[in-house]
Image 1 (cartoon, rainbow, N blue to C red):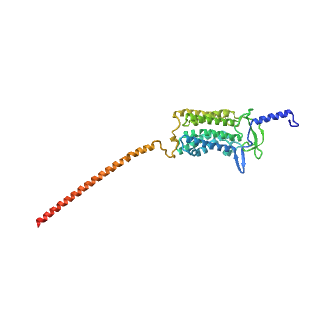
Image 2 (tube, helix red, strand yellow; image 1 turned 90 degrees about the horizontal axis):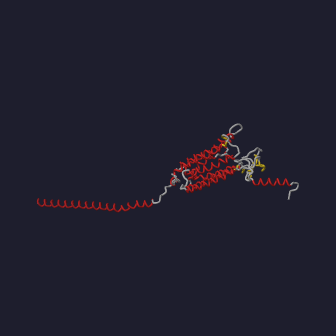
Image 3 (tube, one colour; image 1 turned 180 degrees about the vertical axis):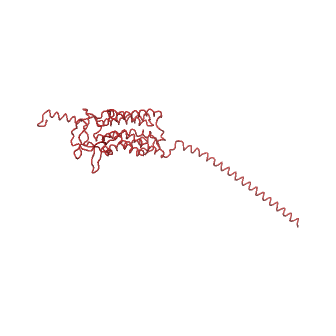
Length: 376
């Protein structure tokens, strides 16, 4: 039944608008929740969840490849802080105009909780931290990278959920059913604040719906993780080749997804800077993948145990030890017999000497008696 005081045209328009709205993806009304004085940020939670999953999965893969339990966690103590710093430095360097210049506050560059982590800086400086950790533990860095490769790309997928809450990483307008609705968010004083504000209504802003490029990258990252796991099992990738495959797969998707984005970014020759970086990194990873092929399959598991791991007895060591011990045991009686023979010889010599002394003494006594009789 049509509501009173409405025309058929009005009802039709409302119905069509509702259908279109329900078919699109709505954005969250906020990305931050206040629990007392503590702000809970969806972006930070996603980053933490991704790190935990990457470490957990990397640990399982490391042990399966012959490594010692706890190694991935110990190295992550170095790699994670370096990666976070590197990711922030890359973001600030490529989007410097957001933090430096007239009317800008350079201290905002330290507000990592407001989002803004560049994956290339995170990987580059994170690799430095991982190298330090690998040196401390005495394990090869390429083997460590292979173990954590699929976990890293899944962690990136989880991080894209944080971009969804922040209403960032989106593309141009679209009429596709999965278009993303963007809402105007304001803070407590009524100013526009996309990161910390709250949507006062759910009326899409001008240009919505848009391509949810964060979602495209999320799905792509999961596919790359599956590819790395499959190829690693089938071809027993080692010496950093699984990690190189992850980098190639990720950069391939990142290039075309980056070209779809319309949010603000630094341009180089009219192209987003991350497009150039993705292509260069892809070329480097592909070159390494081909060069590392000459090293063969995976590293010897003994190299993954680290210098602090207890020695592991190889099969047959115990039997060899028994065999080596057996001749020594057989030699004991011989030594004992030789010793007894020497003792017997010494005893015989001593007895002969004592007998000779006794005979000599007896002869002397007889001569003395004879002399005594002759004197008488």
